[in-house]
Length: 252
Length: 371
Figure (cartoon, each protein chain N blue to C red):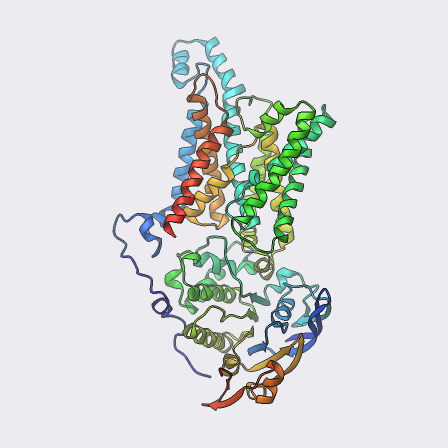
C-alpha cells in the first residue's frame, strides 16, 4: 500500500501540492486526473523521491520514502517520467537491461537475463533488441521504456503521462498493456493522465486533483459524473454510458 | 476489461513502417542504419575486434619506441648483437630505458586516460560536444599550476599536481553548476558555455602568467609535448592508469548517470555521488596530464564520438574501446609529429589538434548529411 499523508510542495509562494492524503491499495490501475498545473506530476514525483517534499510523508509498504535507502526503494517502486530524451546511444536490450540495475548492480546474472528476455517479449521488442533506441519510432521507444520498468520488476509502477506523444492506436495499446500488467504480473500501476475517458475505461480507481489538492477519489463510475467533473475541470461535460463505460463528451 | 491477445506488437507496421532493408551480403554498415544491425556492427560488438585493435596499438607502440634521432632500431640492435658490440648494445638499452620506453608508455597512458576522461565528461554533461579542454577543466588545472608555481615555486611535482587537481575539480564543478542553471538544454549551448568559461579562466591565467613572466611556461602546459619525457619525469602518469581503471569499474553507474538524475534515482543510483566521482576522475586525469605532458585538446572529443558511432554508449563496452583508440590516436600523432620534420619535433598537442579538428568536422558533416 502507498500512503500519502499531508504531502505538500511549495515553489516560492505557490503551493503546488497542498496537503494531499490518500491511500492507494495494491493491485489495479490507479489514474490521477486534473487540469494542467493541478499538481499531479509533482505529487507523483514526490512519491518516487524525484522531488523533495516540503511537508508530509509517503510510505510505500511501510517504508518511509524519505529515509529508505534509494537502492532499496528501487526494488519496490519505479517511475517513468514523460520526458525521456536519451542522450546516450544504447541498444534496446542494453537499456531494458539497465532496469535490472537495482537487483544486479550492473553485473547481469542468469535471472536478470531472464527478466530482460521476458520484458522484451512482453512488449514484443525481441526483434528490435539489437537496435539503438534512437533509431526507433516514438511509439516503439515508449514501449522500450515501459519494458525497462517491467524489467525492474517493482510492485509499484508510476507513470507520468505515458500516452504523451502516442497516437490513438498506440494509446489504446498502451492502456491495455498496463491493465494486462496488473492482471498477469500483479503490479500496481499509478499514472497521471489527461484524457478522462482513458482514465474512465481502464482504471480501477481515479484520484482527481485541483489546484494542488486532492478533491475526490473513487471508481470511474463515481468520478465520471457531470457535477463532479465540473468541479474538477470548471467546464460542463456530458457523460454517456457506452457498453458499460462512462465516457465524457467534452469535445464541443 | 477487454481481454487482448497481443497488444502493442504490430506497431512496427502501424507507425512509420521502416523499410527493412534486405541485408545484402557485403552491405556496408551504413545501409544497416535503419534496419537490423548488420554483421559489421555485430563484429564490432565482439571482443575479438577489441583484441585486434589492441594488437594494432601494440604494433604502433613498437614503432613509436624505435622512432627517434638516436640510431636505435631493431636493425641496429641486431647488428650490435651479431657483432658482439657490448658497449653499443649497452648504450642502446640505456637509451631505450631512459627515453624511448618512458615516452611510449606515457603516450599510451595519456592518450588512453584523456580519451576516457572525455567520455566520462560527456556522460556527466549529457552532451557529446564537451571534453575536459572545452569546459574549463584543463584551463583550471593550468591556473592552479600557475598559482602554485608563483606562490610555492619549490613545491614538489606531486604537490603541484595536487593543487592543479583541486583547481580542476573547481572548474569542472563550476561548469556543471552553470549547466544546471541553463533552463534550455540546447545541445550546442552546452559546449559554448564550456568554451566561454574555459576562455575566461584561460584569460585570467594568461594575465597572471604575463605579470609573472611565465608565459613561456604556460605555453608548455597548454600544448602537449612528449619530447621532455624521460625516466623519472613521467611516473606520475601511472596514476591516470589507476583512474581509468576506476572509471571502468564504475562504468555502469556512469551510463546510468548519463540518462539523467531522474532515471538514476529511480534505479537507486546515488546521482550526486557518481557525479562527484566522475568529476574527481576527470579533474585528476586532466591535472596529471597537464603537469607531465601538457594539454592534448580534441582527443577526449573525437575518440568517444567515433566509438559512440561504432558501438554506442554503454560504457561497460565503450571504455575499453575509447582507451585503446585514445592510445592509438596519440601514438600515431606523436609518431607523425616526430617524423614529419625530422629531426625536429612538432608537439603532439598541435598534431592532435589539427587531425582531431579535421575528424570532428568530418563527423559533424556526416551527421548532417544523414539527417
